[in-house]
Image 1 (cartoon, rainbow, N blue to C red):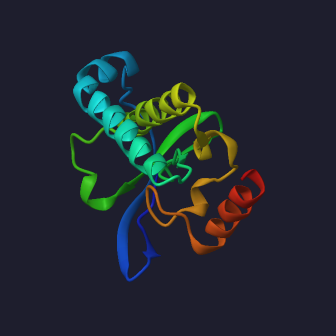
Image 2: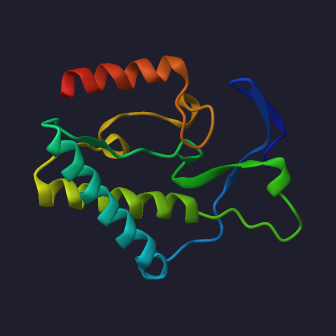
Length: 154
């Protein structure tokens, strides 16, 4: 069972319940269908942004982020939950991870379609849950690893 912990995250502290095994699984195709309008809008905005960047003779580089609040432990997917989330009917879900995966899929497809530089940070950089202050923001020491990776990649 997870234990309550407090971990500093910049100027604020997040009260965390701890790691819990995911028990509520999201069907990616169903979620993709439900989010189709939002994903399509994101794709359109990414293309528009690309055209605007290129108009200034600059080179767009897109990076797919990864989530820091999920990890595999002993072959089981776990999610880091905040204490406020844990109620009697709470079921740890992988939905946020699947959503990020769908957004990353759109980013990578636009990169392929438009022949852009795209860094698949989600797939190419070895970061673990301890490298993050929250779901998306890497700790300063981990940011240096990401910066080194980007420097060498570019």
